[in-house]
Image (tube, rainbow, N blue to C red; front, side, top):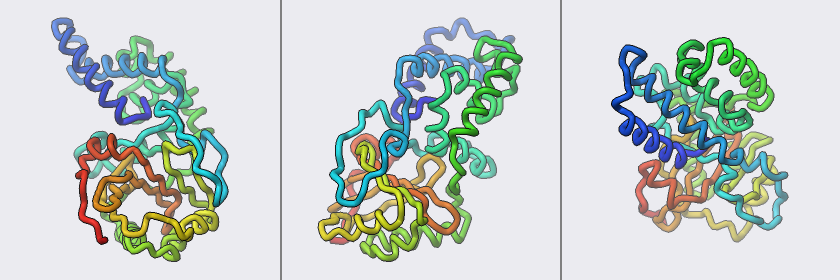
Length: 294
C-alpha cells in the first residue's frame, strides 16, 4: 500500500495506537477484531498516501545510463519503493506463500503506486487479503457496487503498468537453488564471466538511491569488468525481500548493501543493490558484521 517497509512500520504503530485509544468503541456484534483493525489500518494508509508523492523504481525515474557515465545524483527517499522482508508480510502457511509472494513483488508494488489511495486500498483488501467486496466496502465505509467500481478501474491500471511477472522465490525448486548457488559463488569469487553469463540479455542493474542504472547484459558486463571495481571479496548472506531472493552484502566484513535479485527462467533478470544498509539490515534482521574472505 505504502511502497516502503519503513512507512509500513510507522503505519502499524499508528494503527495500534488508534485501536488502543478507541478500544471502547469496538463492537464485536458488527464484526471481528481482525476486520476492525484492518479498517483502521486502511484509513491510516489512505491518510499517509494522500500526503506523499508516488514512489517508483529507479528504472521509472530516469533513462538508463551508459558504461562510464557518472553515478549522478541521489534520489530523494520519498521517491523510491523500498524492499520489505518476506518474513514480515507473508502468511505462516507455506502452502499460501507462493501466491502471496506475487502480491509483494517490487514491480507489483511500484505499479500499485499509480493508483489513487482508495483504489489501492480496495485492490489490496480484495485481491491480496481476500476480503469480499461486501467486507471491503464495510472496511472502507462504502458500498459493494462502489468497491467493485474501484476494483475495475484499479485492475485496468495495473494490467497496463505491471510487467511480465518474474519468478518468485521458491526455496524448494532445485533449479532455482542451483542458479542462486552459482550466482553467489561467482559473486564472492568475483568471477565476472560467470556472473554475466547468468544474466538475461535485457537484465537490469540498479543501485538505489542512486538514479544511475543499466540495462543489458553487455553494458553490465563492461561495468563489472572495470579494473577499479570494488566488489571483489564481498560476501553474501541470504535473506528474502518482496517475494524474491535477496542477500545482505558485506564489504570488509561490514554491512554494505541489500542485494535483491529478480529471476526469469534460468537467468537473473535484475540485480538491485539497495545501498541504505544502515536502515535495511535491522529491518531484515541481518547482522551488522559478517566475516570477510580477505
